[in-house]
Image (cartoon, rainbow, N blue to C red; front, side):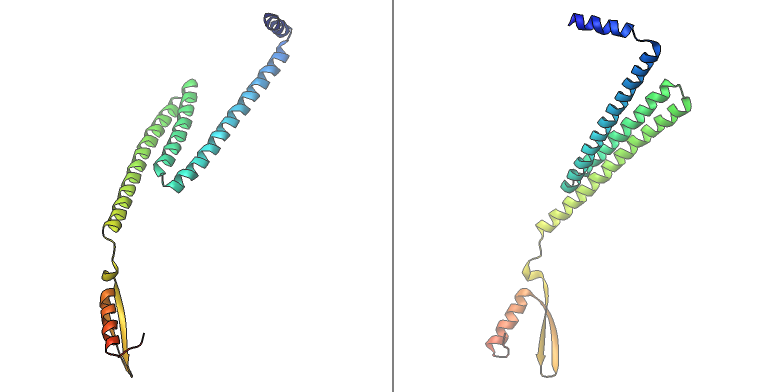
Length: 172
């Protein structure tokens, strides 16, 4: 292994500045491609995870991923602005980060409120289901050219039909 290292060092010493520049350029290109691949893979994963969470009704997880992605992008831009000592960009990016955090908190609050409202609505439907005896039914009685509509519940309809049948006034 030492021989390989010595050989590599010897080979590097023989490179002139143009060859070294080309090598650095190729390394930079390879790094950029690797970073692009990494970003693309992360984006694909987030997209699929968003679909899974949307079906499961987990909007908070979707918003969290969006927030983290946006925040990472802003922090990378802020790092670059600090590197170039661009005061205006630094201030703008700090404000964008602050607003992004504020927006995320507001969205989470809205999601929690919506989830709470849905849970309450579901619980109300479960705890007070409309029974058959509470549903309104219209019974239409016709006798010759006259008719009457009687509103009642399911139990009242059954009682009326049973009474009419016993009186032999109807056929069902």
